[in-house]
Length: 168
Image (cartoon, rainbow, N blue to C red; front, side, top):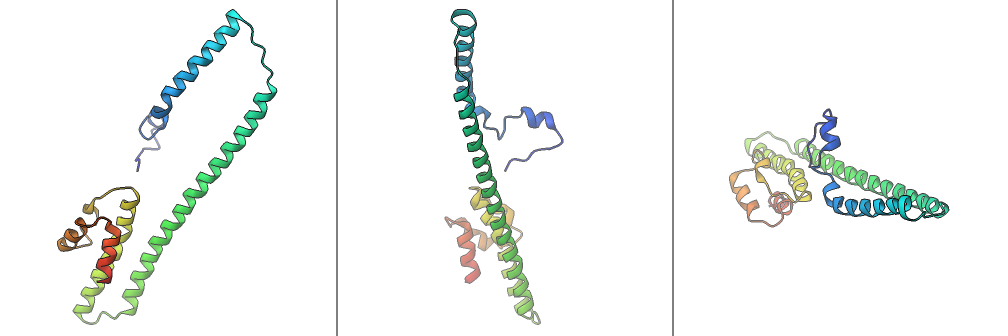
C-alpha cells in the first residue's frame, strides 16, 4: 500500500513512487523523438499534408475505449471493497454470535470465547496480508499465542492455517 500525504500536492504531482511513469518513460522518449523528427521535417524539408478526419475518428474510438476501461477498473475496485466489507462484517457477526450464544458463566468457557474471538479477529489481517503478498505475523501477535505463531510460521498459507486453528 502506498502511503501519501494528500496535502503535499507538489510531492504528489512530481513523485515517482507508485507511478507508472518510470515504466513508460523509454517509450515516451522514443515517441517524442519520432514526433519531433516529423515536425522538423514538416517545417524545414517537406510539407506533409495530412487529412484530420481519420485522426478524429480514431480519437473518438480511443476516448470510448478509455472510458470503458476506467469504468471496468472502478467496478473492480468497488467489487473488492464490497467483498472486503463482507469479510469484516462476517467476522463481527460471528464474534457477536459466539459471545451472545455461548454463556460466559465459568472461566473455562470465557477462555474459549476469548481464544476464538482473537483468532477470528486475526483472520481479516492475515487475509489482507495474503492479498498483498506479505508474510508478517507481528501484526497479529496481540491476538494469538507464541505456540500458534509457530504453527502459522510453518504454514504456506496463513489464513488457511489460522482457519485450521479455529476448527481444532
